[in-house]
Figure 1 (cartoon, helix red, strand yellow):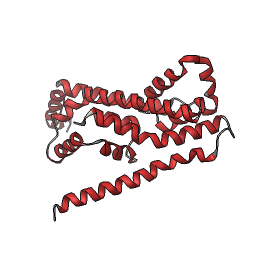
Figure 2: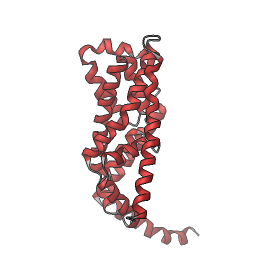
Figure 3: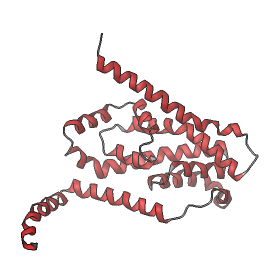
Figure 4: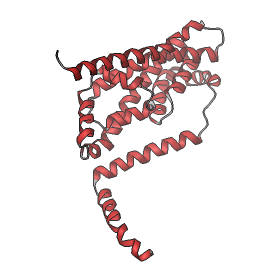
Length: 238
């Protein structure tokens, strides 16, 4: 039985060996290993208490804003949820500066994730898209800032994972970066305010956290607008 099963496995082994012999496949495999490593690390490493984070700003001194943006971006590309990064930024710097640094981190993380996805995954995807996948890839290539905002606001994946995924498509970098920042703004303001409230209870008004609801409102409006546009496109000119 073992000897009879081996010949059937050989074509699969040869195809796998041929696939791994392609540079684009090796780069794509490296991207998958990178994401898997981030995911495992995220599960194993405990997160610090947001209430203890303001001490970091005092220790870093004048370098604290740069560290917040760069460190936050690195955490986001390592698949740490943006909610935690924004809460921490608000806890350390307060609602206004915290929101600004969180948006800076989101912009940098979007650029880094897109660049890594484009470098490691785009060739592999471009060589294999056919049929509906090719049309989907074309949709990403034509996508405007509004389209990026729509995808960003949908609860389909984390911030970092979406950035990597966009890099593997034919999407243009400038609309992607602009849409990523605009989509991040409402929750950045809201969660930074909540983080500031956790570290300094009573220092800000409860209503400062109200912008957190804007993400849900914006999602509903954008989805409705997209649905109407798609319906009109399918119906065609009357």
